[in-house]
Image (cartoon, rainbow, N blue to C red; front, side, top):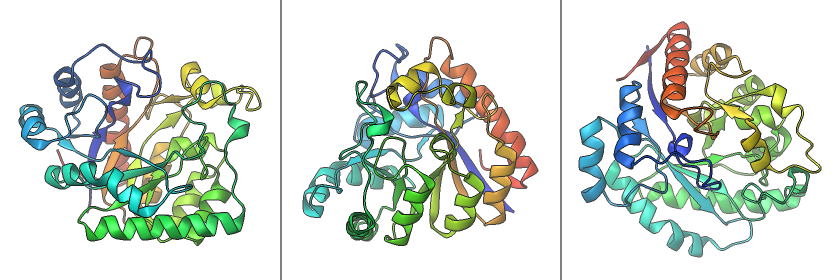
Length: 298
């Protein structure tokens, strides 16, 4: 039987790009709520101390482990040696925390953090540019792995690798492991089941982000930004949105994926209380994991 671990990202409590979409709770309270909701892992965020001497006892009190975390990469326009320096502290921290991976998000040229730049102005790469970029990411991922920590490449709305076609091209020209994010791919208009079929051998981490397609369908991408979409409520947790996670998780199970399924849904914590959302997301994942014959490791 395949094994699965269920975690969550702290972006439900504190949004790093939109601080106004944040709940005024401490790290301890955030971890307590996640633990009470039945989750055993949390990705890192801006209120996490970056050393296990300080963080370890806090995690232990709540039965939570580090199940990943975002690195804002700049390889598209940058230098690998410079990125090695930039990631060094997080790499050392994640190794000591026994994290499953570092999530690589490309932020060079991305408009994901700019409220005044519409989605239509996201970066677009030619195949030659994607080939060069893919080689750099591959070399960087290989180096991080040799240092003892897998990398997981996050396709992302408003970034250079957003759409299914862009992801296919990136995967063609790179060997980097992949973070599969159902919500971002659905927002980008892609087919989640086809992405799993085409790239399952490279998937080493999964974000179970759901979407509200009725909101996404009304977004004017020529005028509205990624952050505008977040504020409007484009994202939510499994069981509260439009995606069929039973079919998605069964597809992952059929490929033999075993590991972390991380709930990640940036949205207004006042309108969508994080603890309630964590409970709802965990309940839906437990249901669909059972249907897919996963054993959940608590």
